[in-house]
Length: 311
Image (cartoon, rainbow, N blue to C red; front, side):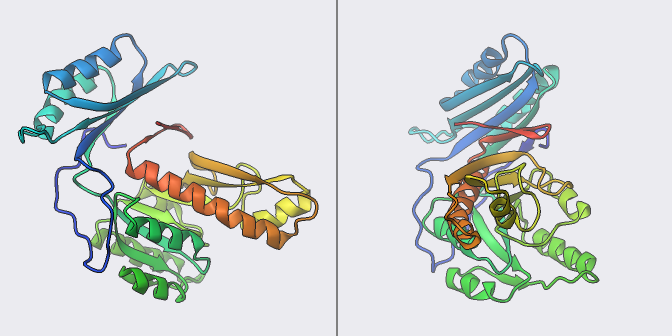
């Protein structure tokens, strides 16, 4: 996280060809905090919000007693029936000294500024298609200005949803140059979050470092079991009775980032590899869409190699 990062209000754009439902009925702000645990933290944060006239809608906190760390998420309305609104910049200036005093890492964001998400995928399209449908239906509070793929088959899906498509084929000798081009596309489109919707390429450490806790991947196994490219085959060979899927933030270590969501399905000795693949695709769609939604709703805090996901 970046201390004191404030998303200010910007106009959002929705293509005319999309019919969407309103994800949120009102503009809200979310404050995410983690810091050393100590007495009075909740009172001091909520008291300052009260002094600035905040109408708190949701508040939740968690303590890791072993590491003595405190985590908090507060959401409040930034509009009002009287039309006066909540002054985010004024609150940001008032909160910064308190955060410094209490050694807080914190972000303050507004729902009026929708994050911009890029989808990366390969020739498996079920996760990308699911996210695009949810986006079009208004379930995801974001913009999707870019789809990137190393396979041309994705272009038809991008055209259907009216999203610009970039074809970036990758080979072992061109990987570094392709990543440079991809990063430039992300910069040009002001991307906040990269979602690897079954993108079957390993990103370099240099690429990942550009988006700390800003790249979400779905892995087709119940991590930490069966890492790598063929987990369903490995699960079948091992004779497991449960298969799973995992959505996690991407780090420089393959399939080892902080886990956001997981789900499982029971299988039996009668199931073959193709059965595991088919059932696993449903799990992949579910865990990835949940992770993306929670990220967009600003419900996730990372610490170490763990996450706190607030209800």
